[in-house]
Length: 158
Image (tube, rainbow, N blue to C red; front, side, top):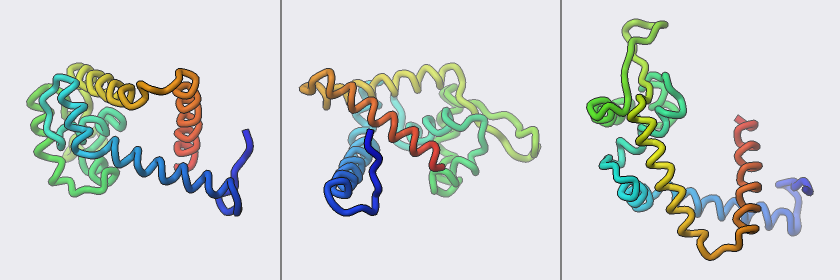
């Protein structure tokens, strides 16, 4: 695979610009309220957008304080509290005291929460599959390989 320098003129820069524009479109689609509502409806779960938006990062970062999630999500902690209460009431997350600070609590995803996440990810995959339905299998496989490489680069850049 040829390495691309983002500062270089010519076709490589045009390709990088095209990737950046395509990723913006993909990101806007993935995180739009309409897409998230469609995924939630497909999953069979009845979650608010706020609940859906909180459950995924809890599953990625647990055990975690809501204040830490608020920083990661760039929102005020107070906006997460109602969703956290609803998710806890449904048995999707659990709170426990933070061993480093008894005044604070850590949230984690429960077994029921993991099942809910699994249903959401299956519904998300089905939504993506619908977009790719007219594609050749080899093209989908190449996209998967390329996106995995991009994902790895993002993780390394953090």
